[in-house]
Image (cartoon, one colour):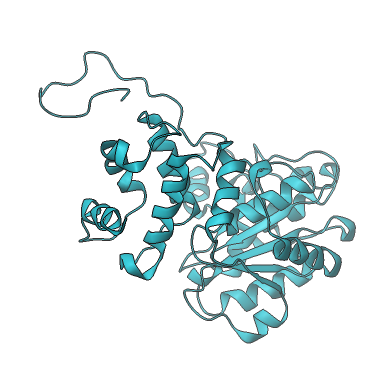
Length: 327
């Protein structure tokens, strides 16, 4: 361990602890993402047809990372422009939000910027449309600190977890996406329209927490990321962590993961890719060696269970014991 957090000696550290970088640092980089053949086909379809791509799948299967991968693969940078859908989201929120209170305060006190545009924050789709236009044409409408490359460029826009938004949101979104324009009443109803050759590419994700409108589905390219099997998880570990997945330790880890994801474990929250990566990284940090079996490093495995087992009321040590008893 890098430091002791137990309270056997109830005093704080003598000096503030400087934490190391996260073990996950760089592991989620888009170049480590492995799209399956079906997803690659869906990418090609949505790019040729210029339709939004709807990606579904269980949490943790890489839906969000797929959008970042596409943005990186097309040469637009490491991250897609992201909009996180919420229960209060409206279609306008995709384009911008306006700080009404901040603008009112500035007008009353005469402090801060007196430009309306400096109280606008462009959201993912709004920013992508602005980036599709030359900066020289829109500079007066850009708030301080807005990142624009100067020349027009294309962007991938990620609308994440659309099923969290109100019922009408998906259809409203597609109406806006098809037009690729928006108006800002706070800027004298200024209209921005993306240049046709630089129109944003839209990826939408859903955890399938509720059914999406049929009209919405008809207007999207669709792909469901299937449940990963053991071989798929091994490929992900090799790509993300650069480790030998044939080692005893990792084979035990994969077998344990598949047990947890199966019906025999009776877990309601099944661990997925993100949990597996955390679990393996934590095992390595606690000294587990590739040639060791889980039984050889039970204390390290027990300490890492909080990354995998997240069911309220379930004792992780009992789940591990049940798995050991199967052998």
